[in-house]
Image (cartoon, rainbow, N blue to C red):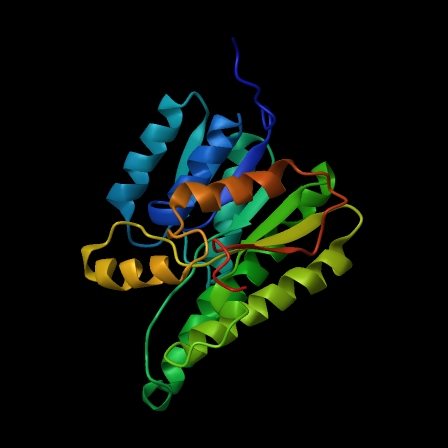
Amino acid sequence: MSVPKPLAGKVVLITGAAKRLGKASAFALAQAGADIAITFRNSAKDAERTRRELELAGVNALAIQCDVTDPQSVRAAVKSTTKQLGGLDILVNNAGVYETVEFEDIPIEQWDSIFATNVRGPFLMSKEALPYLRRREGRIINLGSLGGLQAWPTHVHYCSSKAALHMLTKAMAKALAPKISVNCVAPGMIDLGEKAASQFMRRMAKQTPMQRNGTGEDVAAAVLFFATAPSFITGQILVVDGGLSL
């Protein structure tokens, strides 16, 4: 029995997808039939491994070095994707920075740096991809955070940047309608198996109504939902947190 491929013939560009949540989302979209371009900044080996694994899933795949804060780098990544894969249907703005710093210890440079990646990056990528997405009535999916909805005292700059990304999602949804839908997936506590975080993750699982933390596959399923949902669904923030925010 053949598995349905709702994204067959589609091209996806997903930023920061050499590993972790970006990689999980890339695989979910590839399994749905899409050709995939992933970007990476420093993780060249991981990106090449992910690219090969994506090709084994039966799709065309590219790995492109890109700094999402740099307009020229962003332009080159979009150009390379559309030239080699024949266009662009879905942009997933996944690249992001997460940091824990006490409020009084946040230097201005660090404040600016996190906004450059988490807000300016998706803005630059979306702007550059716009002509290609318009041509195919495409979609933009941003990766927000529960931290963009809740105030975390040791993550003030991070929370502020993700709240800005949530509003960017809503404003872009109105600005780019009716040709392009724009939505956002906001993960809660996602356990990626990191030993340093294991104790914290166990504690958070107990506080979560679903009695577990999220997985990369949970987030990827939400990204896939927006990639295949009716375009009438736009401007939405889908929280993937097992009920933690309730």
